[in-house]
Length: 154
Image (cartoon, rainbow, N blue to C red):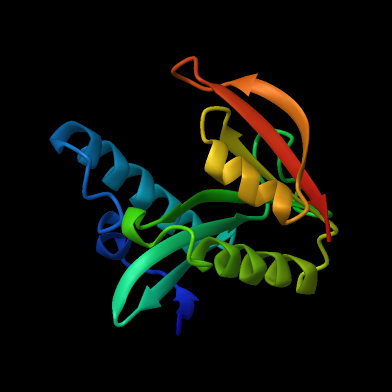
């Protein structure tokens, strides 16, 4: 698969990855994406996108510093909001996005990368384990859902 990986700067590019979202969810997603892109402009993160045949098919964020223990801005970075278009999952797109984010983190001097994944998302957990991530904590999300914190040494 011939993917193009680039930094995303436009909200609409990411919103295309959420076709199943209803009006209320779409508004919330749009607000979150705009906030994240604003943080990227300020230098706290990079938002990567994967394009295939000119269409956005995946995204991932590399966060440098977070309020929680997932990224400290020095040695530990965080992968955030990884998403691949549903019809194109299991084709290596997520793996490629993670590899690009990890390589960028490594070049910036980070030695550990973390991520959080919903405990119910078995396919993503399987991918992260395959790529060398290991569980280091469990925690509740804002809506009470269970998350698994995973990390990897670069």
